[in-house]
Length: 434
Image (cartoon, rainbow, N blue to C red; front, side, top):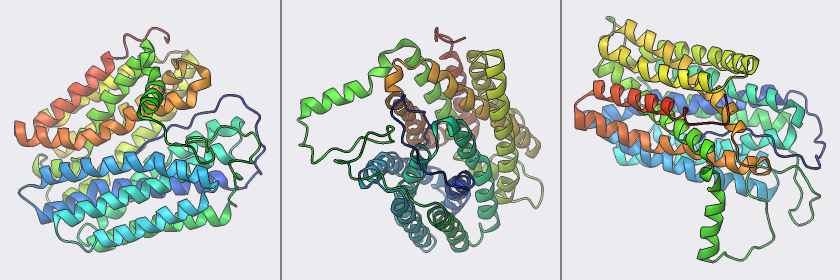
C-alpha cells in the first residue's frame, strides 16, 4: 500500500469549495474500508492462502508476491492521481477503483495456484491505489485550509479502525477464503458508494479554462504537452529530488525509510510468526491470535499518535520524541526473541504500536520543519513518500531473504530491530529542529 501525507499548499488564491455536511465522517469510512482491505488481506487472508498452496515455500512465495505487488501500488497511485486531476472529477475514480477491487478480490478467492494469486493481488493493489489516490485528493479539493488539521486526524484514524476491522473479518473467515475476500471487497465498494452519493463531486473544470486555484495533488494539467527529451526528463527528476541535497531533510528521509523498513519487514510475516515461532495457548489459531494482537497494536498506535503530537507541540521538542520512539521500536523486537510466547507477543504488539504511532505522528511534524523551501512543500513531501512506499516494496524481499537465509524468525526480529535503531540514530545529525 502507498502512504500519503496531507500537506497544506502554500498560500494562493483560495477557491471557496461548497461546504458539504458529513464529508469528514464519510472520509473516515472510506479510509477505514481501504485499510480494512490492505490489513485484512495482506496480514491474514493472503498468507493463509499461500500457506495452503505452497506450505514448504510459503515465506519465499509471500515475499515475492508482496514485493512485486508493492511495486504496482507505488506506480499506480501517482498515475491515478494525475489522471483524476486531468479529468477534474474524483467520484468516477473512487467508484471505479472500488468496484474493480471487488472484482479482483472475487477472482483471488477462486484461484488455487501461486501464479494466479500473485496476479490477483497485483491487480488489487493497482485498483485499490486508484481508489486511494482519488480519496486522498478529496481533502485538498473540498476541505478549507483552516480545517486541514482536523481532516488529517480523521483520515489518520482510518488505519487503527480499518486495520482492526479488516483483521477481525479476515480472522473469522480464514477457513472460508472466498467469503472473506468478498466481504472485504463489498466493504470498500459500499464505502465508495456512500462517499460519492452523499457528497457531491466538485468538478475542477477544464484545465485550459480553469481559474487560478489552490494547488492540487498531482501534476498540474497542461494542454497536450510535447514529450520531453531525455535530458529534460533527467533535469525534472533532479529538481524533484533536490530536497535530498538539504542536510536536515536528507537525514529525516533516511530515518523514516529505515524505520518503515524495520516495521514492515516483521509485521508482514506476523501470521507465519504466530504459527511457526510463537507458542500459542491451546486452541488458539494464528488467525484468531491476529484478531487479538491487531486491536492491541492499533489502539496503542492511536493513543501514541495523539499524545505524541500534543506533547511535542506543548514542549516544542520533536527530535527526542522521534528518536526515542524509533529506539523503542528497535528494542521491543527483542521481546519475541527472549520470550517466544503469547504473553511476549501481546507485550510486543502493544509497545510496537506505541512506538510506531508516536514516530509517524511526530516525524511528520519534524519533516515539515526541515523542508528546504516553503513554496516547494507539496513536492518535497511527495519525495518523503518515497521513504514510506519504497521500504514497503523492499520489505518482503528483505524478510524472505533473512528468514530463509539465516534460518528462522529470530534473525528477522533482530534485523528489524537493528534497522529501527539505526533509524533512531539518523535523527541525531538534524540541526534545525530541537
